[in-house]
Length: 191
Image 1 (cartoon, helix red, strand yellow):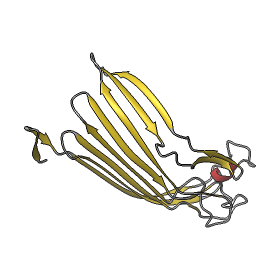
Image 2 (cartoon, one colour):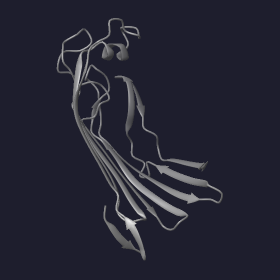
Image 3 (cartoon, one colour):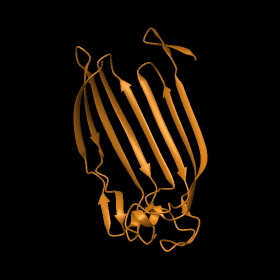
């Protein structure tokens, strides 16, 4: 750990780095929990594998500025032909690439601001692989304020630029849009 001077005070540079790589294999259960005609049951009854890798980084740049970033690479596909899908089909709602970046800067001991981005590559709406959900990028922001007596207030503005995107799908024709520009306010207490 290195100490740097910032505004006349020593600040510890804290770095967190995590890297994971694995291959998840899924074998179908003996009896599905959902009716066999639903996409959830078809996906659950499909033998599949998902080689993936993830990287996460957290760093305190200064005593006032923190950055968190993450990236995931996922390649999820069907390994054995079934009545639900042929071998080689992509599993639904699994983007190949996912990325996030969050910055938080504390202006002083009471007020802070944050700005971040979330990005996902295209994914398939269902196990049929006939409908593709497009890639998207969303920008989010936040303001933080420490109130007296351990209270904290926070205001988040999600999807600042009003991106149009699809966040979920239950099959090829029941696709949910992502939330529009959303403002959230919370007040909390730290014990």
